[in-house]
Amino acid sequence: MTELQTPDVAIIGGGPAGLMAAETLSGAGLSTAVFERMPTLGRKFLMAGRGGLNLTHSEDFEAFVGRYGEAAPTLRPMLEAFTPADLVAWAEGLGQATFVGSSGRVFPKALKASPLLRAWIARLEGRGVALNLRTSWTGWNAAGDLAFATPDGPRAVRPRATILALGGANWARLGSDGAWAPLLAARGAATAPFRPANVGFTVAWTQVFRERFAGSPLKNVALGFEGRVSRGDALAAGYGLEGGAVYALSAALRDAVEARGSATLEIDLRPDVSLAQLTARLARPRGGQSLSSWLRKAAHLSPVEIGLLREAHGVALPVAPDALAAAIKAAPIALTGVQGLERAISCAGGLSFAALDGLELKAAPGVFVAGEMLDWEAPTGGYLLQACFATGVAAARAVTAKLS
Image (cartoon, rainbow, N blue to C red; front, side, top):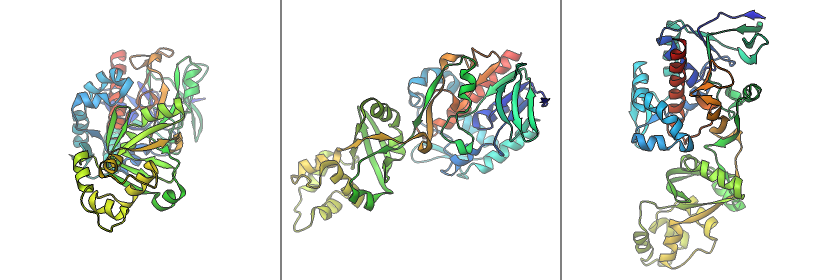
């Protein structure tokens, strides 16, 4: 087996976490090589750019950290060491000015990933980082070297340290397929099963609703589930519900559906109007208008919202203004299934933090881990990329400390 050029540190995975680790290590003067099995770097990063590239979020830091749920205590020191402000400064240092949207999300002004990625790769190459493409990691060989499959045949390398940044398991066509899990399990590293996150849910729509409203947006709604509330937009898909407001609750909803077989999501179709105000509007003389026309004029409901109201409460809606207003403010929708990993924006599961000493594998000293392959999840809104960058920085700093 032919050896590749041996760097101080080998980084396996050329996504945001791996490239940020390479940036941090090369800035510390360590020779660094990135090994990526796809033909190009940052494929998921470029995919995120199709939605404007939501880099991070501007909200209060305590609220920000809380978005990571059970993993928040573990991720906190990494997020404190590479904060949203640090991420913005890094992007602007690459010539990509940013702005804060009305939702508090932070975007590059270019609203795409390609200019940032090009500038980033150019800087890494300028620092001497070796970028090896179409190079698939296959584990460790009998000598303990990192083994790779390349277009030119098997290759091996023995760096002083390794960082694995191999992603999750829900974007196989972009390089994240979770194929690394058996390799680490064979070394005795504990992993949790991959589960869909930031994902849509199945709803048993009536045929009439599905045929008429599949693909229709639900604008500025409030979704409630077991004391949690999410404001924003959703989408009535043919199979059920999806969209940002749904994704913010998807972890709790997924767990409930998996445990009980269903979960009831309560939708406030007019969250900016109080129950009393809505009741007063609906109490005005209706004249000869149909109920649908009256709901459009008095409550400003769109056709899809009226349809969803009937899905939730039945075709025969309440007549009394107070009861009708209450129905609009709390439309229960039964979720009966979770869409699979192939439809999820991100995934939960992966390498357990219990398998690590900091970010170093207990079962393989000298091997560090970063990014989405770790068992954490967060809603969309900039939280996913921020944690990928922050864990990449943290892993690189841990390597630097170990090698020094």
